[in-house]
Length: 209
Image 1 (tube, rainbow, N blue to C red):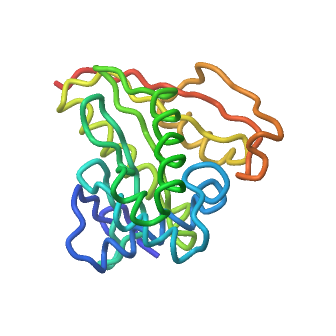
Image 2 (image 1 turned 135 degrees about the horizontal axis):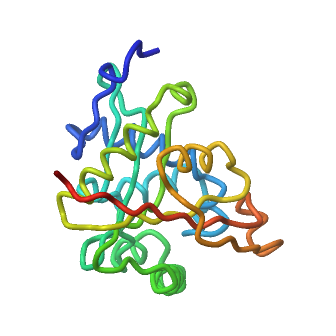
């Protein structure tokens, strides 16, 4: 375990294909249930990780490395920039076929339209930390990197949503200065994805000095 935060490196790039595979694994393990039952409905673990390896857009994320290994991932989205999980039609069609790719592509469009990123904000698409590194400050370092990135690109706010089955994440975001803007109850609609509601949060950034 790291003795200080200085032992953890935050990077905007993945140095190698091995690091990409590590990032995919960390992200998948954090969101597997949601991916299989709500996001893009892969047929197996192997297919899910294969698709993630193709749709990851590293420049739209930050990665935490400890002893040369990826132990944390945060994906983000800005308006007119690529999503962290960039589900393109060619990828979905090649992986799921014409019909399977078509309805998954339509579903991605619906979710993207429902949660747009505005001109002056960054929307967090997901934060994942390897299980053995939780409680070591990795999530805070990743979120601080997003805040610095937002300021440097003239963004005034960061928004995110946290599911009601992850209270520890909500506590982290509150410590980092995020405030609740609203909560929604989905009930059985999202139960198979591992949650029944979500809380929406926002942080207003102080200008860089």
